[in-house]
Every structure is written in structure tokens, then in C-alpha cells.
Length: 137
Image (cartoon, rainbow, N blue to C red; front, side):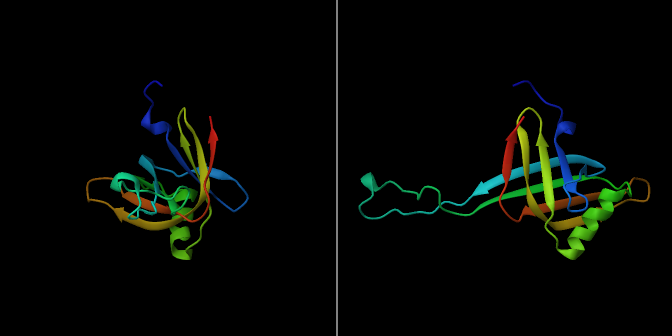
């Protein structure tokens, strides 16, 4: 796979619960991470004393984070309202030449900052709130 533009990794939010996804405005940096807890079932009978893990068990989770510039668009307002309402709408993450990850997320943090001689910026984090799906590109 050839190198990809970072700007092609897009985070989209369902704007009204109908599957109308729009890219969150102003993002300059984005990140998605996947995690799976392991369940240790090691016992005295474990071969050679090696750790054993229970296949298919444990909690899976995903998190999205991003930072960018405040543009006062509909997606900024939507993200802010999602935080205050505690909603878990659908999000999509487009990973170039890989696929689309989709599922419900909750906005777990949102920060705004600015200096007197610069632009207003924000950082936000989202935590998965249900099953994720993956569609290969």
C-alpha cells in the first residue's frame, strides 16, 4: 500500500439520525484506535506455564479523537450538543485504502482553546457505545 494523505482520514457524524453523515468541520488531525481486553484463563495445568487466553471473550472498544479549528458550522454545533445531551449517534471513520468503520459513539470530551493572535481551536474525543461494522474499500 502506498503512503496516504492524512487529510483523507475523515470522521463523519450522523447529523439527524437518518444516516445523513457529514464530515466534522475543521478537523486537522484525527485518530481512531481499537482495543480488546483479554480474559486470562491460565491455570496450574497450562502447558509449560504459558498464559492462556479465552478466545472471543473480553470487551471490545474503539475511540476516536481529533483536533482542529473552530469554523462555527453545523457539525460543530452538532458535536457540542451531542456532548451536552449524552447522545450516541452513528459515526463513520473513513480510512483511506482500508475501509469504513461505522457505529455509535458518545462524545466523551470536547475542549476549546484560543489565543489573542490565533484561531480558535478544539479537541474532541469519542468512545464507542455499541457494535462496530467494517466495510472494506
